Image 1 (cartoon, rainbow, N blue to C red):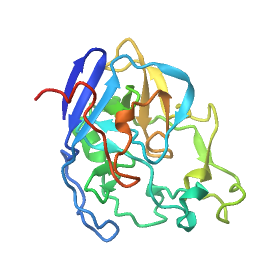
Image 2 (image 1 turned 90 degrees about the vertical axis):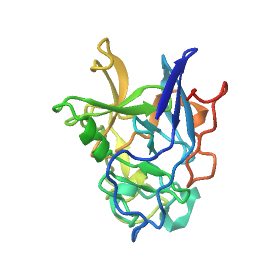
Image 3 (image 1 turned 180 degrees about the horizontal axis):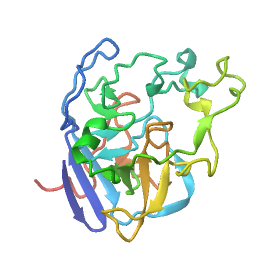
Length: 248
C-alpha cells in the first residue's frame, strides 16, 4: 500500500493483496480466486464528526486496512433472496456457508479479498503485547483499531421485527441486533474517544470486534465517495482521486 499526504488529504493506493496467510480460495463455500485490485482512496487528514450517525449501504466499503485489504462487512445474501426486505444475512453467523477463512475474510467475484471481521493474520503481525493495534483507516478518515477486551453496545433483540423471517433472533440476520447506549465500551458505530500510540493527544477511533457488529456499520464522520464500490454489490471499487493517485 502506498500513502501520500498533501493538501489536507491522505491518498491511498493499494492492490488489495493480503500480506499474511489466507485460506484456500476457491473453496466449497466461495468459488472465487484472489486477484490484484486497483484501489484509490482518499480520506481527510483531520477528520471531523458530523454530530450524527451515518449508516452506509452495501455498495459502500467501511475502510481499508494498512495492508491494502478492504473492510466490507455487508453481504449480498438476504432472507428469501430479497434485497428489498432489508434482512441481510450476517457473513459470520454461519447461517450460510460463504467460505470464510481464518482471517474472517473471503473473496468477491471480482477477486477482491476483504475482511468481514477481525483480520487475525494482520493483527498477529502488528501485535504489541496486548496494546491497541492500529489496523487501518475508515472511509471518514478516522483510524481503525483492534483492541481486545472492548465490548460493543449491540445485543440480540428479544423478538424479531414484524414482516421478516420467523423464529427468535439468533444472529443470522443483521436486524436481529439492536444498539443499547452504554451497554458496552463502544458507541453505535463501534467507536470511542481515547489516546493511542499513534494519537497520544487522543482521537476518535473505531474498533473491529469479535462480537457484532464485528466491523462497524456506521460512521461518526462523513465517508469519502472514493470508498463507494464501482462495480455493483459484489465488487470493490474506488477510482483515482482528483489530482491523481499518489506518486510512485
